[in-house]
Amino acid sequence: MRFTDKQLKGLIPKKTAYRLYEKGADKGFGIKVTPNGHKSFFQQYTINGKVRFAGIGSYPEISLADAREKARELRALVECGIDPQAEKPKEPEKPKEPEKFKDGTVKQLFDYYIQKMQEQGKRSWPEVKRVLDANAVPFIGDLQASEVTPHHIRDVMYRMIERGSETQANRLRSYLHTAFKVGVHHDNDPKSLKTGVMFNLTHNPVADVPRDPSAERVGERVLSMDEIIHIWTYEGPAITPQMILALKLIIATGGQRPTEITGAALSEIDLEKGIWSIPPERIKNKRWHLIPITRLCDAVLREAIALAGYSPFLFPNYFNSKRPMNKTSLPHAVEKFCERTGCQKFTAKDLRRTIKTHMGEIGISKDVRDRIQNHALTDVSSKHYDRYDYLPEKRKGLEIWCAYLEKCIGGKRRN
Image 1 (tube, rainbow, N blue to C red):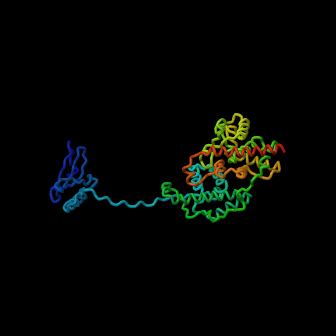
Image 2 (image 1 turned 45 degrees about the vertical axis):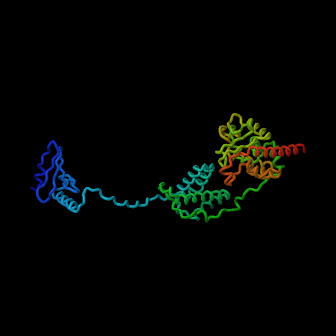
Image 3 (image 1 turned 135 degrees about the vertical axis):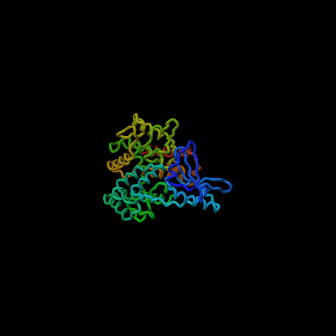
C-alpha cells in the first residue's frame, strides 16, 4: 500500500532499526525507523549487481510527496546506468579573485625602507629615520605613496633650503629617492603579495627633482705637513687633550675613519701583540679590520687609555663613561679649534684624505694605503675570495709613515 502521513506519524520505534517499503509503482521507496524514533526516507536500487540505499531526507523535515518525487529522480538515474551515489567529478576550481590590497601611505613606505636598512645592517638608519620623520612625514606622511608628485618633493625640500640647510636638503632628497626606489621594488617583488600592502608606484617621483650640486661637493682639503705637525704638537685651551689624542690617532693609524677611532672599546686593543681589531659591526664594509699598532701609535694609545679612567671605551662619552664619545663631538671640537686658532678650516674626515695623500708621496703603494684605510675593494676576488688580512704589509706601510711623521715632528721642534 502507499504511505500516508497518518501511517508514517504512527510508526513506533523498536529495539533495532527497521525499514518499511511502499507497495505500488514506486518500487524500492521506503522509510527507515531507528530505535530513537528518527524517521528517514530512502530509495533502494541495484546497480552493477550490488544493492544500495540512497538517503533522501528526514521525515517530516522533507514531506512525503517531495520524498516520493526525489525517489523517482533517483530511479531514473539508475535506469540510465548512473549510480546516484557515485562520486561526482570535481568541478575545476574557480580562479581566486585577486586580493584587495591596502594602498600604502608615505609613512608606511618610510617604515618599510627603514626596516630594510636594519635588515641589511645599515648603521645609518637612525639618522635617515630622524631626517625623514622631522622633514617629510609631517607634510606628506599621510598621503598615499602613489599620490606623491615631484611637486610634493620640491615643496618638502624647499622648506629645508629656506632654513639655510642646502646640504641637508640634498641628503633628504637622497633618502627620499632611495625610499621610493625601495617602494617600486616592493611592488614588483612577488613575495610582497603576502604583505597585503602595495604602494602602487609606477615611477619614482623624486627622480625629476634635481639635487643642488653647489650645496655639497666632495671634500678636497689636504692639510700640509706643517698643519699636521701643528695639530700634533698643539698644547693650549682651544681643544681638549682628549680631542687632540683622537686626532693624533687618526694620523698615526694612517687615516682611519674618525668614528671608528672615537667609538673604540678598550677590548679591541692588544698592546702586547700590537694589533687593534675593529669588529664588523663598527666597520662600514662589515668585515674585521686589523690595524697594526706602531711604536708611535702605542704611545698615543697609552696616553688615551690613561685619560679614559675606568671607562670600557677609549674615548668615553662626556656625560656617561659607559658609552663611547658621541660621533658629533670630534667634528664640533675641530670646528672650534679652527675658529680659536685661526687655522684654515678642516674637518676630522679631511685627515683621512690628507694622510693617504702624504703616504703616497713617501712611496707607500696605493694598494697598501687602501688596505690600511680599509677601503671597500669591489672586484670579485677581493670581495668574495680574498681573506688574507695583509697585516705584515700594513704594518710595514704604517711603520714607514710613522717614522716619517716622527722625523718631521722632531725636525720642527729643533727649528
